[in-house]
Amino acid sequence: MGDPKKFRKKYETPAHPWNKAAIEEQGKVRKEYGLRNRREILRVSSFLRKYKKLAKKLIGRATEQGEKEKQQIMGKLLRLGLLKPGAILDDILGLQLNNVMDRRLQSVVYRKGLARTMSQARQFITHRHVLVGENEITTPTYLVSLEEEAQIRFKENSTLASEDHPERARVQKGTPEEKKKEAEEGKKESKEEKGNRKEEKEAVKNTEEKTEEPQTEKVQAS
Image 1: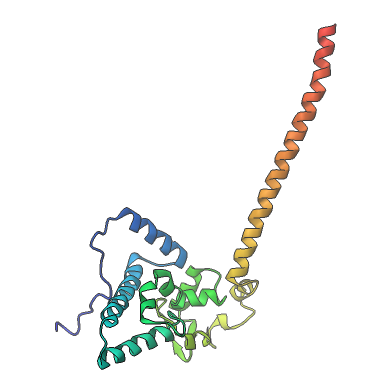
Image 2: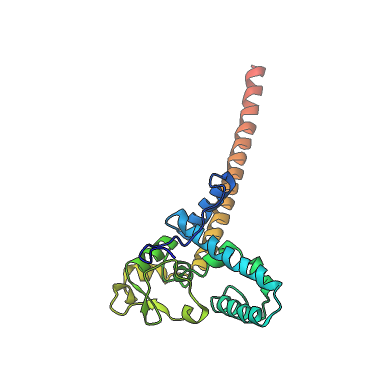
C-alpha cells in the first residue's frame, strides 16, 4: 500500500512530454482559464481519462454490479453538470477538457461576474473571500456541483461582500459575456473608423492631383 503519510500524485504525465502541438494547446488553455501551471491541466486530463476508461469498461458489462456502478458514475457526473439529464454512458466518451475546466470554482466565480478576470477569481478564492454554501473553499480547482453553483458568494466578513467595494463596483458594470460583446463592438467600430480615414485620405489625394494638373499645363504653355 505504501506510506500513508506520503502524498501521491493526482495526475499522470503524458508518454511524450515534448509534443509541440500539445504544448501549444496547453499554453492556450492556461491563458484562457488563468491556470498557474501545467499540472492543473494534467489533473483534469487524468480525471477525464479515468471516467472514460470506466465507461468503456462498463459498456460491455451487463451485470447487476455493472449496472450499479454505471448509476453511480452517471449520478456523479450529472451532479457536477458534466452530463445533461437523459444522458447515456456513451456520452462520457464525448467529454472534453473544457467541459471539466468550466466546472472549476475559479471558472464559475468568473462566469457569475464576481471577478473581472480568471486571475482575479483565483486570487479571491486563495485569499479566503469565497464561500460555497457554508464552506470556505480555497482551492480554485474544486469542481462545483449544480446545487452548489447557486450558493457561491463572498464571505460576510470579507471586504468584497460590500457592494461599494471598488472591485465589486467595476465587476457590476457587466457580466463577462456582456464585456466580450462590448469588446467585439468596439473592434467593429475601430475598423469602420480606419476605413473612413482611408477613404478621406484617398479623397484628399485625388483633389491634390486634380489641382496640380492645371498648374503643370500652364508651365508648359509659357
